[in-house]
Image (cartoon, rainbow, N blue to C red; front, side, top):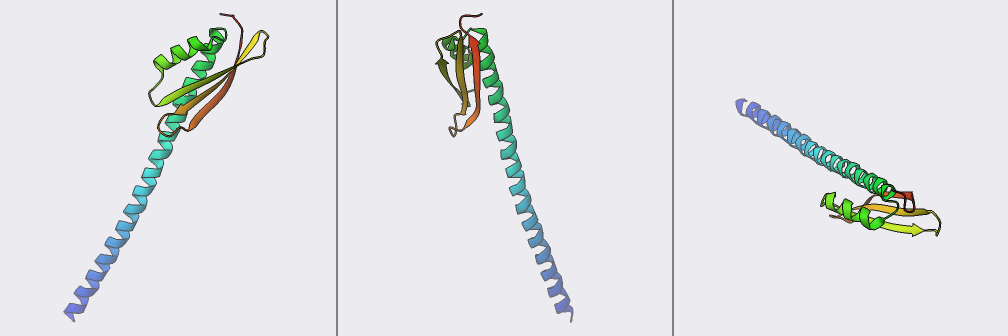
Length: 121
């Protein structure tokens, strides 16, 4: 009789440990996902700051993309790459398509279009 009670107790403890292990595994998975979401959010926020800085610099330098790229690349985080394509319509306005790319996986995080008056500083 005593032996059956100890067997029942052992089975109960095994079930409790199994449930605890399952809950721990689920928790680790959720925490890992939350970390990745947070990291993507931080990268997107930083990439947006770089793109906005490039757009404002493009306007400030009167559409001189070479100066903008030189200045931004000097200050940019090594995790990002700036791609800037200038479109000229032949008038007083110059447009720039600004793309900030994450270096690790090549994902485009932010795309902006900026306009500047030619030669205005």
